[in-house]
Image (cartoon, rainbow, N blue to C red; front, side, top):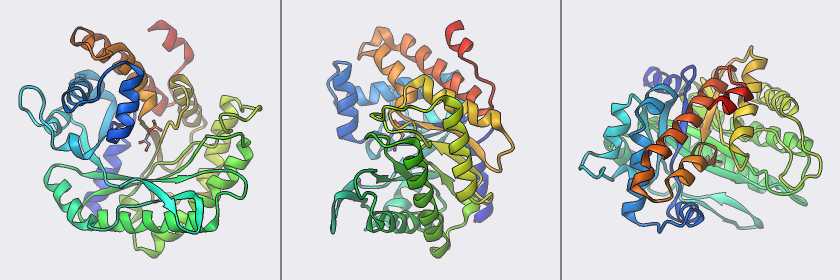
Length: 339
Ligand code: 13P
């Protein structure tokens, strides 16, 4: 069982490949579609995601896995082919978001705890039957006055560990995602401290829950200043501090780390990943699991029109290729301009 989980996890972070996070909940995808003037219906969501999964070259070369939402894993393409089959045909691995969202945390009302453990064993068995071989659970950690609290870190780390153990029991690789938000005006060093504390708590709880690290993927934030912080760190500082923090917290038994983009611009997210891989000498694969930083450009190019599908696929292929290069430390800003 651990061998199989390790095989999947290793494939998820194969050299030059990363993960497409296309698991926006109904509310989030509506927000994204509102921004491009498209009504969010079952059909438009299907059309949009189908165009991504049918981007043959991008999928086959650079996308190791796709995180789906419950609706999408059960949906068929326009011609009746299950969307899961399109992903598999491209040589990519289907995955599934299984958490039920971040809810107010009792006792610490400004913070949240991610829910979704009740009935999770049964849901995982169903998702495995539908083709999912990995899952995702996102915990949200906010930095602010007297935040995060230990209550928040402990509750979220504990839930992540129980989720991860249930996944492995079901033959599914857990993506463990504790996201320290980049909202707010905190410094990069405040982000470092909170990220370090968060990761220490998470790996402690994974140990207590008997989770096999060999069959686990970590999806962390980068160590980066808050969006409203007047002092923004350069690319090299973000890369160095992120690598230092991860080396201090993430055991080398973990096959791979796949970052979230968290509100960084497309090119920032690529530049940071590239700079980290250029540092090199890392004990784990280091790649992307981007939502916005892979999809903002194709969404804009598509804007809900069938005639824009080729342009949207080209925009997606470009970002996938740039991030694929960054995952090898072979990207440069000149490549963006060349395209
Ligand atoms: P972003 O890359 O847009 O942060 O999304 C990744 C993700 O899956 C967050 O849970």
